[in-house]
Image 1 (cartoon, rainbow, N blue to C red):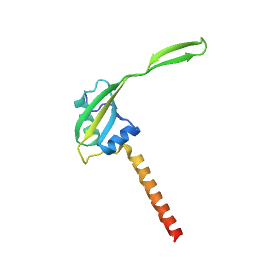
Image 2: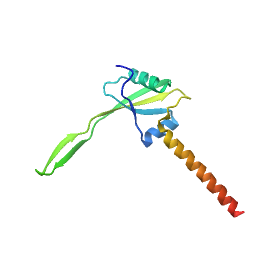
Image 3: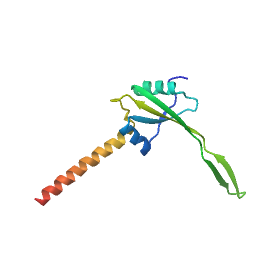
Image 4: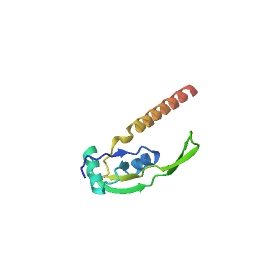
Length: 123
């Protein structure tokens, strides 16, 4: 398995929380990827030190679709997804959620300005 595999970060609230609290990042990886190849790909792509990799395969949900002209339903399933939980060495980080962090910082600054303005008006 080459180290240049197709890994995509999962952008969800749970993944964001894990990255903030534990330093664990969640990626979608190919079904054939091994833990060693995932660790090597993340280390090379983001220039960080990987300490642990856990993987899980989420089974696809079964769905049904209505076909209008015949009035019948067609059953099918979504494809399975393999997720990798990658823990980094303390002090290392990946700027996946940089936009959310910037938005939080702007919101904090705006709240501080509003508080100062309200305090100034009350005097």
